[in-house]
Image 1: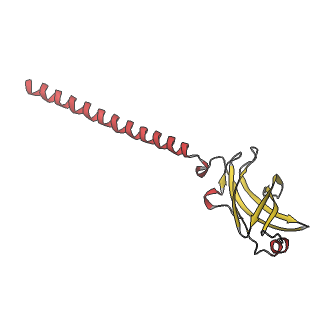
Image 2 (image 1 turned 90 degrees about the vertical axis):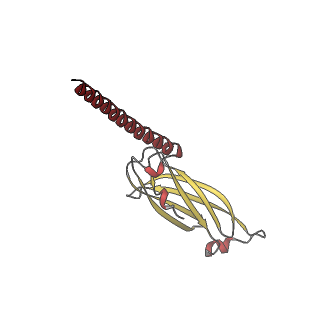
Length: 159
């Protein structure tokens, strides 16, 4: 199980993306696979723990997999999470035997990689509007100064 590098940061109430890989190379999976169609129904448990190993959220799902399976899951984080480091665990459990994997992620108030595409577009448009405003204000100011200088030069030549 892994969390892609670009998704290791989140905000409270946000989403953490998990890449869960299940392989029948695992001894436990080999022993439990005896179906003719070579598929297996398993239960995956997801937990989110804080730095003191307190469990903050639990979720379970049943999946059917065949040979090697890679699934992407989006885990919704609780809204009440404070800033800090957290661990997400994925466990495959059957008959008191378990296989688990965990990965860490960070929750912060501001998360650049957590923004939606619309936010990046809006930010880009605002940045463009700001740059265009500065350009035109500078151009207007220079034009006004040139006109003022030309008027003074004409006034001086007349006298």
